[in-house]
Amino acid sequence: MSDFLVKRNDLRQCRIVESSVPALEPGQTLLRVDSFGLTANNVTYAVFGEMMSYWDFFPAENGWGRVPMWGFAQVERSEAKDVEPGMRLYGYLPPSSHVAVTPAQAGANGFVDSSPCRAALPSAYQHYLATDADPFYRADTEDLQMLLRPLFFTSFLIEDQLVDDGLTARGPILISSASSKTAIAAAFLLAQREGVELIGLTSAHNVAFVEDLGVYARTVTYDAIESLDRGPATFVDIAGDPAVRLAVHAHYAEELVYSMTVGVTHWEELGAGGGELPGPSPILFFAPDRVTKRSEDWGPAELQRRVSAAWHPFCEWTGSWLEVIHGRGFEAVQRVYLDVLEGSVEAKTAHVLSLD
Image 1 (cartoon, rainbow, N blue to C red):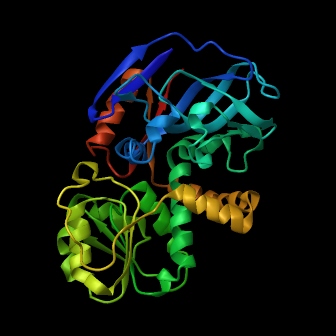
Image 2 (image 1 turned 90 degrees about the vertical axis):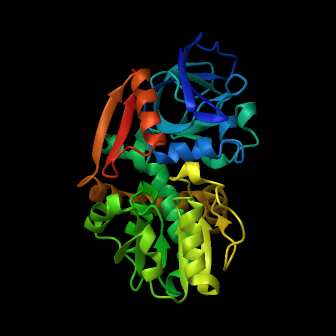
């Protein structure tokens, strides 16, 4: 089997390694990874790999890690009950040709991976969904599912919290890294609500793209934050850039109602600057916690139904402007990973990698 590995303490160091395909133990299943999307979301997994245990999903040799991806795989061999070879699945995968999993709760809908290394990790990442029974799945939107489905789920949960906490009625919502896919999905959902004012914060390079999306009421460059009217506002920070965060907090100060930290598209700036911020302390948004809350409130099936109902219109809209770039093989994985890491991928494009 082949693996794409990243140095955990230096994300620019990466390599492709060869090893033997895992031998199956009773109760295990071998998946052959077909394809996955690679976006800034995956860089976030790597940046927070230690803090939020993302490296623990697919353990690698000491000092190295497998950056988790979302994509499709096929059952190649199975020693597990109710999991047959040929089953096609959507789920959380390593950038590897193969992965061994331990199915539990298996059936026509798929299964949950109960591998010991994942027992203490968030359950939101443990489900492998059979495409035949997945309400999200459509053969003609596989690319968008790999690229945007996990981001959209996060965006759905962000929008849900902002509405649930009454923040959409307490002044404008400012979203940094407004050209990122997570920001765009959140803005798409919020823009459908009456009376919500959205302000997209972005670089000068991406202003035209963000404006053309038509989901933000106003687009403001990072160096023009002081031009915004002061008053109650909420900040959704997807850039993770402390200079931008400080500019927003300094401008609104105590009038800033809430500051939510979501991602790190500006990953190299994470932790730079620091110091005390005016206004409320930023709160890290952790999607699995929101999944747990809404699963308890609505039930898991109803949560999935609501997300699925919101997903399909977003998918139709995104398909009209997103340019998907396809690559094949591990050399392409390495090249695209480094491009995404350096922020050199244009906002209107996204990469899907195939391994077969």
